Length: 133
Image (cartoon, rainbow, N blue to C red):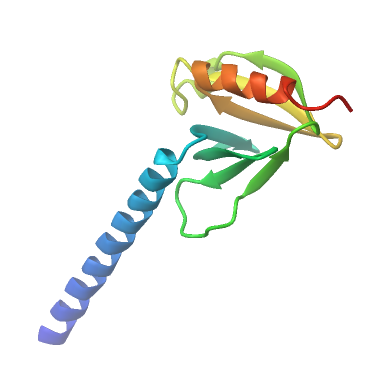
């Protein structure tokens, strides 16, 4: 039984360290200049993460994960704002009530983002500052 107890303690330590690492990564990413919390809708669920404006791109990184590559990259001048709205009643449990839901299109593909009101202003400014197509 002693070996099982040691193995369980080691497993618990590894899990706690992994969680600390993931949270530290997210906190560091949010401290970076040009970073905003964003949620990206995939099917019926929301993927929470951090968006970073880098040059002419908005890079989306998932909040839970260890990878260093963005999950989605939006390029300035290729994104069209289709509509904006508040959270639907079915979304209120998973999104803050102040979230702005942004429906966009890029290369014929539709996608939906949820961002804060001030981040929405920055997002629209970023879209409008791109060179005309």
